[in-house]
Image (cartoon, rainbow, N blue to C red; front, side):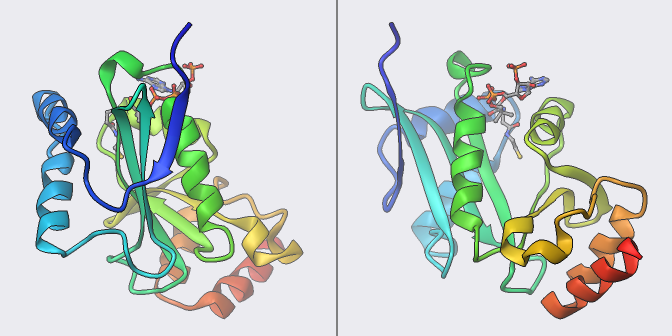
Length: 189
Ligand SMILES: CC(C)(COP(=O)(O)OP(=O)(O)OC[C@H]1O[C@@H](n2cnc3c(N)ncnc32)[C@H](O)[C@@H]1OP(=O)(O)O)[C@@H](O)C(=O)NCCC(=O)NCCS
């Protein structure tokens, strides 16, 4: 039987982040390099209000990472961004990525009403859609998820994936929460 999976917030980068970095770079993903550079320079340590960076370990070995930032491209405190999600190849397709993202989304509740991300691969896009994210056409994001629980019953029936969702995304990305609510009402009527 496989050793249990442990997920916990990382307040410092563990030494074996280097193994993830090498593996990710070998696959053409440079975002672990970026994570390490920005962490060491202090540019991004997932330390602003509402932010978190998680590490997943098996037998004390780091096998996956993922973080939740305040979205730096949105300029709105209520928009979060999933970043730097990476699962080691040997651990894929066994639920680790989903577990990490669900934990990050739980953390976002009540803080970020919209969570966005950008991915460049078809595989990751399928993964995020499977988790309930909607594809959008936006220069800062490829997928979004509206945290309905955070907004209350007025948006329970909103289908962000339906036609027109990217219009909605564009409109509320430049506005505030009240604008999002107003847009939502307009779309539902
Ligand atoms: C994308 C990634 C995080 C998925 O992690 P994972 O632990 O393998 O994901 P899960 O096991 O939780 O997958 C859940 C579901 O997502 C979908 N999925 C996951 N990987 C997929 C793939 N390569 N192709 C198609 N669907 C995929 C499947 O529906 C899967 O369920 P199933 O295995 O029962 O079919 C992982 O492949 C990865 O780290 N890739 C490289 C880095 C990357 O692309 N990161 C995202 C950058 S934004």
